[in-house]
Length: 104
Image (cartoon, rainbow, N blue to C red):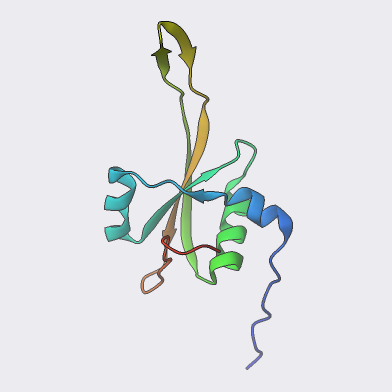
């Protein structure tokens, strides 16, 4: 049997997977082998999948993305708007785990 070649992590992978998006809803996804990451708006599903598989050495079942619209907020009476951002919900194969408490 041929040994699987380990892919080397590249700089763009660290730019795509900046940090996990930790909320109550994202934490509930961990029951279903899901991890939520905040990614750049230009990131595509295949690039996100490749980055997660390489950086965390896990097998990804699927990737769902969404653009979270920014909220209108007021600070000291001045109206402002939070930025829009993209989230990626990564579903892992059974038995695969990513510990989001530690860094890459």
